[in-house]
Length: 350
Image 1 (tube, rainbow, N blue to C red):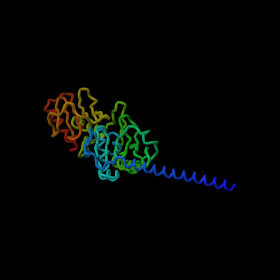
Image 2 (spheres, one colour):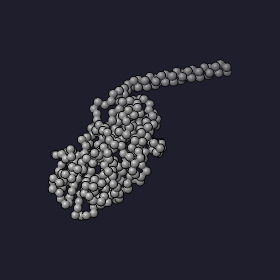
Image 3 (spheres, rainbow, N blue to C red):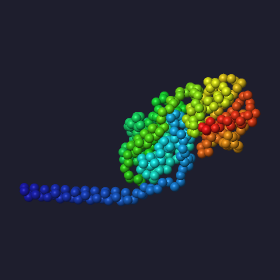
Image 4 (cartoon, helix red, strand yellow):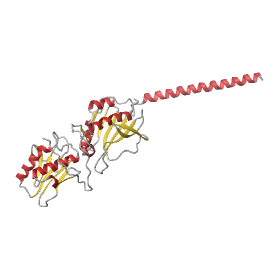
């Protein structure tokens, strides 16, 4: 009986020893395989992209920061520059952990990269409700409630936060959307949600300084009438649509010597006279390249004069221009040029 017991215990010990040996061997093999696989992965990039800006993007230019709730009504070509410029380049580099390159796309996105991180900021009409980076959770961003997707140590994250309290309208973009993605070969553990939180707070503080509330547009996109003088240093260039329309109406009313209440500002940055059918002046802002080109100059700016209209290019490094028209009674070309030429300095904030 004792002999059998000893044999049994010996057999058990042998089995345990064999299992332990193979378990250790398996663990060592797994560790070896992991190290070999990790060593085989390409090294993460160490340099910034050499070709910059990328296709359909522009170098970030200096633009005025919107105030009040006007950030939700920016033209697309302006929005990307506002978002990139809201955070100084040195701050971008500090938060992202290395030298950065910035660009603004023609669709209104601010795009910032380091050697291993890709970050985008844009204004959207609706809050994000889903993401490839996981389930949503709430996060406080600049004293606002935001929605974040992604976890600390993950390879990507997204953040959506409402910028203004004004009711939604189909012509505004009241949400800030931030996206961060880490290069898959970079194995550095980062708190990407926290990174986006820091960026969001800096952007919000820069673009929501004290100012006017967003106006409520009528179904035909008509805005309430408001007298607004030229914005010093910039005029209608890179302004929000309501600020553009209000400045244009103020200038037209003054130059035509008509009450400003007789003019109609609209949410697309235009202003038209509306009261006397025998009298007509109007101004329309455009944020895309002109198909006509600008063959001449007026008031020191590239211009095209085709009575009763005058088109004036407002900026050398962005596709912003304005069409002024004195429709009735018709003005001779010399008088039309004189009238439009006098409007150029205030249009530029001079």
